[in-house]
Image (cartoon, rainbow over all chains, first blue to last red):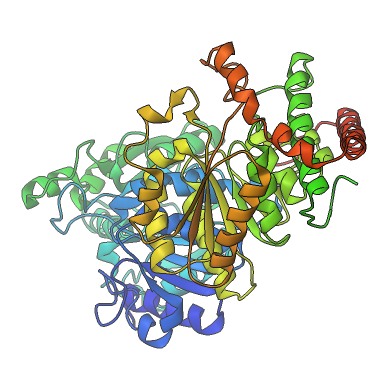
Length: 333
Length: 306
């Protein structure tokens, strides 16, 4: 058993070991500190020439990584808190994501920007957000998020091997979670199947005790944990059976696994930690209904407010298991 | 001989040819907008030709270049041919990037441009890091304008370039106007001071004489190629045409006064009449051929999402 943090750290060690074009850059990543969340721990000791500590300059970090990628290296840049992706928006949107298509496929931009997102740690309005929704639907930019169902190391290595720029979104609460190696799921009455793309798979978690689940719960990243707890509660206390579809690739949208599940359940409930309006769930709902008439749908997300510092307020603003359960009951009522 | 793969030549005739090629290309381009052959906009390099010709007489042919919205002169002086650029500007499938980029977004060999002020500088710094790490022997030249001095990404990048001793030459072409805003309303302090703050050496010239530009560029390029870290080359010049097509608040009298700084007029006396006529004939033929050929080319089609 290993934690998500250990797997991500392993992936970086492995990538640097295997490919000398891989460079890691970011703020405070040198040992012994090893990065704000320790994902880069040990790298600077082992690969001192290819681990580049930077000043607090997110825009330049992302731009430099884009330039390195254009000229044959494979940079992995860390943005210390995902909230700071606003500072790299120009570099991702108007440079890295555009180069390949704008230059008529003459170039490649194999760049990874890692961004720890998410709240529930009391960090307040500017260090708790899930801002990835701002980068979904940007042509040329792939957005990926690990979860505990797939190997986070494989996912990060796939992103590093990708020829396109990738925004790699790591929910902070995922770091101490155990990666559920095959056969170790705590959902004992469920089967897990890998679907969608080989590189960034989705996982369909289906109850084995029924062939007709009542609804589909769609989520990504840490929110699998909320969906899982809700599914257990719904099963035990309400006899409402859920199939879960857990995405690794958030953008571009690849919905086949979801549509396969919806053809069985006809009900979609999306769970995300970003704010509700104009979010990931909204696009999932729209696309699902375009593909299949007559679906019933609900979204659970953060309220449209900044994320408060006080625990009571943060809990009220971010989605909780109870909200997922209530929405599922409404949807099946 | 004008066009692809022209070996770098820095004799008087070659410098004149490069500047005249840029001048004639841009004049032909501006004229073509009137005939409906071109749509969108463009940023002409007319008046600044000595900068591109002088800088690329000092750089090596394989060096990496990141240019900006006003990139045609840089591309032509770098050795790019006028035909695929003309085709790109006409939105043809045979253009430099198949009609996807247009005037401000071109790519050819080790030459790149983008239309975002300031944002290109960190990318160029990253390229410089890659060239150094790969030990290619290449340096990176990034072209910015006086207007770019207002962008924060520039200063983040200068800090990196100095800290990491990157092989990066930042060429500032101060044409004294950011679109319509005169430099006095946009730049506090001195331009050189902004580089000096990071310990980056400055070569600064107020000239439209291509030989003076070349001499300064040669020193700056040597500094960068020698591994001593980044350098800056600040060239105070004049733009004779509008920022893009019709946005020029300057009076006809002011524009007339600037003509005495015309880099072609400054350099022309160093050639004989026969040499000038020969160059003029070559360049005219090359531009005619480029635009005529591009005009006959097909438009691109969108085949898929890729």
